[in-house]
Every structure is written in structure tokens, then in C-alpha cells.
Image (cartoon, rainbow, N blue to C red; front, side, top):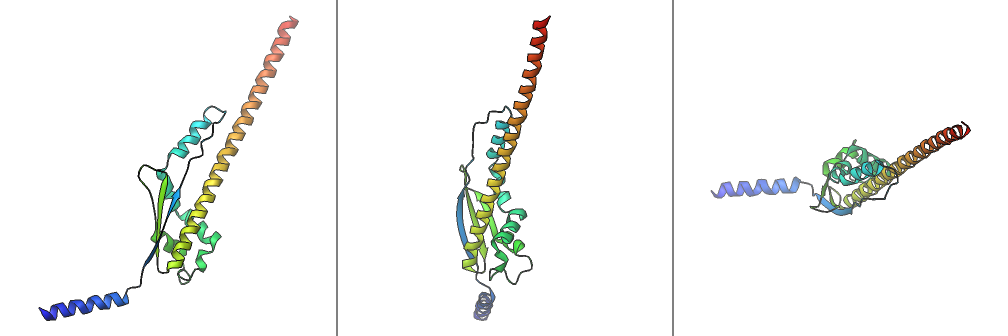
Length: 173
């Protein structure tokens, strides 16, 4: 029995000595929907349905598109813990976790890696990149809305011109 305990303790100590330390950084991110009244029928519903789909945010935060953009724009491949990897985005995705806190618009982000300073830097880069993504998305919604307003204005002007022509024709007869 004593021999079994000694072997077990020895193997445990050997495993502990060979295992690299793992560090974790955590952050929370508030994602607030920008709801603005839109003067075009139908556009407001489309915009609100995007803002209401909060469950998709955690999938997008950890998506290859966001992670790869963060690696490229924030030079995460130059971090000491990523230097030896041929696929830093894959390493980051394997250690990255994002989940929505229950009944809120707050998301908890976690990253586990082999270097403590790198973990915090990776999370900051992911949050910055995701914020840029949301701003681009919001801008495209605004651009779409402006286009809808311009199209509606042109249609109304064309209709008004047609009705004015009909009225003038009616007055002449």
C-alpha cells in the first residue's frame, strides 16, 4: 500500500512539474442597443430585430472573423505566447470564451493562455475589434436608412408631380 501511495505521489509530482502554468484574464462588456426612431416604415422593425438578438453577440465575439481581425489589427501574433504558433487566431479561439450574463446586456469574456500579460492584451484587442465591428454595423444600418429615406422622398416627389400634372389637365378641361 505504501509503495502504491509513493508511486502515485511521484507520478503526480512529475505531472505537475511538466505541466505549463495556465493564466486567465476576464472582462465584462456592456453591449447596448442603439434604438433611434426611424421615419421610414419597416426600417425601424428591421433595426430593432438586429438589436434584440443579443444571443448572437457571444457567437460573433468568438468568431474567426473577429479573432483574425484582432490578430491582424492589434498585432497579436507578435505576443510572446503567440510567437511560436503558426495559427495565433486558432490558439486565441481555443482559449476564448464569451457568454451573456443572465437577463442583461453584459457579456463576460475570458481568455486562458500561457502568459498573464498576453491574456489581458488579447481580451482588450478582442473587445476593441468587436466594438469596431458594432460601429461599422451601426453605420451600415444608418446608411441603409438614409437610402430608404432618399428613395421614399423621390417616390413622393414623382407622385406629387404626377398628381399636379393630372390636376392641371383637369383644370384645363
